[in-house]
Amino acid sequence: MRPPRGSQRGAAVVTALLVVALCVTLVTTMFVQQQTATRALEARRLRAQADALRGTVVDWAVTELVESARESAVDHLQQRWARARPQALLSTWVGGQVLRRATFEQNGQDPLISAAIEDAQARFNLMTLVTASEGGKPAGVRASGTALYRRLLGSLGIDSALAGPTADYMLRSLQPDGPLPIADVAGLLAVPGYSRETVERLTPYVVVLPAPTSVNMNTAGPEVLAASIPGITVSQARALVADRERAWFRSAGDLELRLKAIAPALPEAQGLLVEARSQYFLVHGEIRNGRAVRRVEALIQRDGIGVSLRTSVVWLREPEVPWAD
Image 1: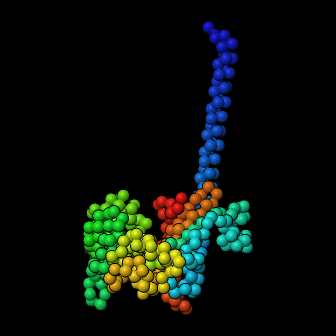
Image 2: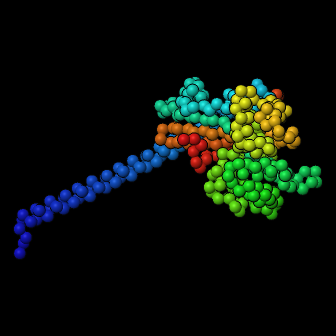
C-alpha cells in the first residue's frame, strides 16, 4: 500500500527544510570561524606593531637621561627625566614625517604611548648585601649593606631577622655551585622566611641591579632614606624629604649639614651608602595600538661624564603586572 501523496510531499518539505537549515548552519559556522581567524590575525598584527614601538619608549628615556647628565652632576626629582610623559599620540613622539614613513599612518593608525623614568637607586639594591671577589679576596657579606636592609625591613613591619639569611643566600648565589641568583624582587621567595605578601610589601623599596650601588639621597623615599642613615626615624626622614624638595642635596656633606637641623643629637655619620648621582634607571611604558595594549619595562645603565658619557640597556621585558593603573 502506497503512502498518501500528501504525506510524501510533507516529508519532502521537511527534508528540504533540514537541508536548508544544515546549509545555513554550515555557512554561519564558516563565517564565524573566518571572522575569528581575521580578528586573531588583526590582534597579532596590532601586538607586533606595538612591540615594535618599545624602542621608542627606551630611546626617549635614554635621550632624557643623557641630557640630564650633561646639564647637572647630580640627579634629583626636579629634573625633566623625573616627569612622566602622559599618554600621547605616536606622531607627537616621533614627529609627523617619521610617522608618514611608517606603516601606522598608512593604515590610518596613530598609537598612544605613555612612559615614565624611575631612579632605580631610589630603592635598596639587594646586590649591596655582598662584596664581589677582588684582588684575591673572596666574596663576602657586606656588613653595612646588611645593616641597612635590616633597618628597612623593620621600618616596613617585616621581620628584620630576614636580612642575615638574605645576605647569605646572595653570597652563596655568587658561587659556581650555589643556588640560582636572585634576578628580581620576586626571587626573594627562594629565601626561607619570605611570603608573597612580604615580597609584595617590599617591591616598591627594593631592586636587584647588576652591581652594588649606593642609595640616591635625592630620590629615595622616607623609608629607604631612614634605613640609609642610622639613627633617624622615618618621621625625621620625611622632614628631610620635605627639605629636599626646597633644595636638593649636592653631596653627602650637604646631607650631613641638614641632618644637624633635623636631628641635632645624631652622631656624625660615617660611611653612609648614599650619593647624589645614579647609574641605573627603570623605564616604564605603555603602548596602545587599537585593541592591543603592550607594557614595557627596561633597565638603563648610564656611566661616565662629558665625552665619556655612555648608556646601555641592561634588560628589556614586558612586566607581568601593570606599572600604573
